Length: 106
Image (cartoon, rainbow, N blue to C red; front, side, top):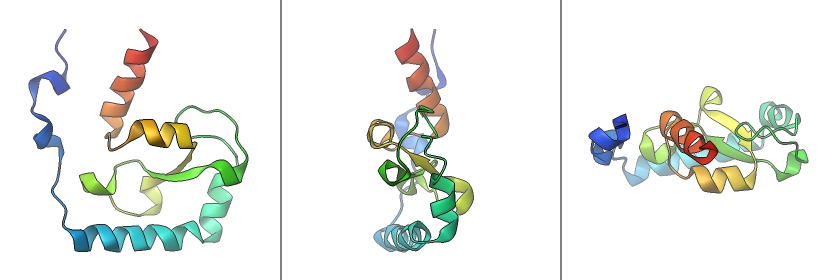
């Protein structure tokens, strides 16, 4: 069965961002990481993706919509996740990540 990812070329899912945009968003993420909001967000100790428990300091900040794909460093786009999920997710969009996770369960 063909999926949307099989039909559309991958470059349709990418927005090409310039270095200034990337730097600005990474700087914003660093500031948010130092905020009380972020400390409370990761204090649950639960990875957003795998739902496994971790020590809060072991959780990383992930952009649900990656900066390189046009995402921003805004609270609605930031979630705590474990290093393993963050590494596997790479620059997937939520729909691509969900499809990837479903393929692992087959």
